[in-house]
Image (cartoon, rainbow, N blue to C red):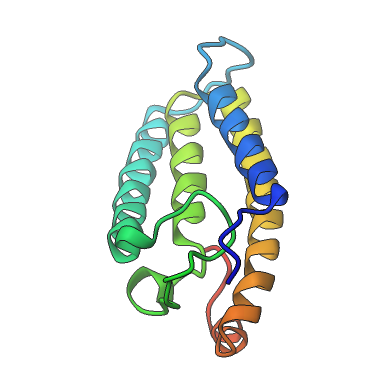
Length: 149
């Protein structure tokens, strides 16, 4: 596998970083009122998402990369949280963002999370095309495991 990182990989990561920065900007834009129990359910969602993402990171171990192109020495992981979602880290980031947005009653953060969903969808489509080229068994994995939860 070619070790040179494609420009498209950098573009996806750059947009992702910009959206993360936008999410955490201390802007007080467009808040909505939610019942207290619903706000706190956002914290529960955030906590579960952090645990789910942490397990996925642990499973990847040293094969973690911000880029969608598979690492040269990587292996296809289909067990653990990867049995639940083909992209558990993206899933965890999305649900964490949504959980924190709900907790803070921030429409702005909900919108940024939706933009991340769109980005992660297209990033995962690109990533999966590369994974199919590298791992012939990936197509069967796609059939039995959802992209996100």
